Length: 156
Length: 156
DNA sequence: ACTGAAATAAAGGGTCG
DNA sequence: CGACCCTTTATTTCAGT
Image (cartoon, rainbow over all chains, first blue to last red; front, top):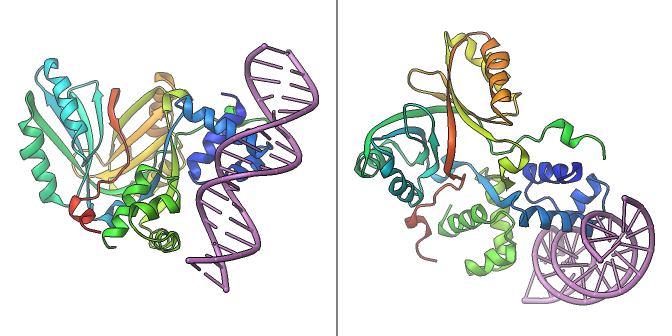
């Protein structure tokens, strides 16, 4: 991971379909050298994949919410994780420090489907004693672009 | 937005670098017809961009945290939004219903840089009276793939 | 559906620690 | 010797008629 690698990662986060030639020109390298670096970043697990960003509301997902989940005992954690991985409406699930055991980020079609997720699914998972839901009113910013520090981009 | 469009969106979310030909074959369409549909999905704002997914820890971002921010009066909201957009460590910022005014998702290099963001930056923004930080211990799941309902994928 | 242009992948060779 | 980069070429993919 040198400066050149950081610049490639930065560019590919901004445009996941940037061509090798475009990137090559920006970093003063040949196209094959660039292709080889991208290949290594992928196999090293620095770049884990590529995805299209979509407007969730245009796909009928009008509700975004964060759900804090309290689980009464750590012995239920593993089973909870397994269940959560199977639920496509749950985009993120984090084990957190503090009062709640888990914090989930979900996108659902409407308040009804959110309610169903809460009472018919989450609350029925073994060990779950409490859920605390925070509804998103508007999103100011919602990106995944991991910031690359300026010192990593300096020089060439 | 018909079934074919939903299938294209689904595929491009799974692989943002899928070629037009790959997609065309999967949905039984010609490559030019597929290209035209993708172009429309982009111009309609259904697909808003493409991005490489990266492993944040491999870029030196070891801390993920959620920060609830309380702002004493709505008149400070606009200025707060503006400031938040300028801070690259803040990946998400949502106006939420409930006790807090905003919920932020941040990724920082370490606890020190998180502390700096909290006390030197966020707490100094006009109107901010309280921040409540939840540190992520491990992430079970962290994706952006908006789920496309099975009824939208049915048929062909 | 076909074609020219563009992008990617592959092969061969050179330089520097 | 290994890591890195270069140019050239073959194949695949894309864009426009």
